[in-house]
Image 1 (cartoon, rainbow, N blue to C red):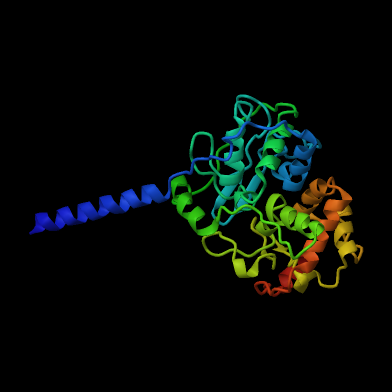
Image 2 (cartoon, rainbow, N blue to C red):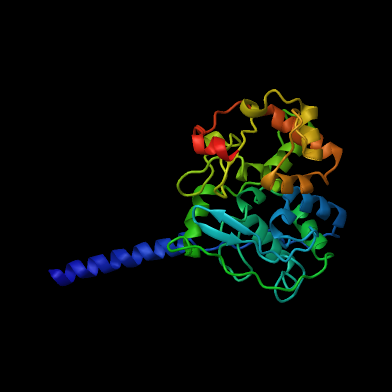
Length: 312
């Protein structure tokens, strides 16, 4: 009897492990079956600036935002991640990657070796980017100087360091759907929606997250605790910026200056350095889209303590 129970338990465990292994497998990419078109490097630079690549991947504490040797520490409730080298260096960067490797990494969060990237890399938003934009981005990155230097490993404790588990996380928080234009809105609005929701990955910071680190969909863009652990990220729905005009939003994206005379600081200052490189048409499209977001209440902001007041 005991032997029979043991066999049943063993078979059940084996079946459960097989299901887990199947669910957490990395996907293959079929999007590049057609011959690659001629790269549009100028469009690749636009994708680079819209995606904020330099904000994370530029070598910290030096002025050149195109020196993409990585190393920036990204804090989170699950550990500290270090942005990798994405320069064209063939040893420490992505110089030996194929175009398919790059598209798979950006849109699916899978490395050339076939393991899951941690979602500190915002591929949950990049999955909505157009394949041609990602291809052009790769072509643009290849025009930049290689930067030697290997970035240290992430500092992520068990069990969050088990990459296979990220396959389950992706099933919960990635839909794999491309951006679809909305015929009910203008081309300008659709361009803005694409930039904000895809390459710009604005929701990654401006949305609260659940205990698994996934964005709470009902409070998308409604602000919340800074994912890096310090401060509060503002609500960018009409609940938070309802008194801003489209022009004021567009001007902010270009200059970092707010309507009240204050200016962007912290991580947003780095974001503005990138977004400000976009065209005035792209700024206008993003502003039109953001202005159309309905008001959404975010999580309650903790009340300040006397200690907080003294530190300000």
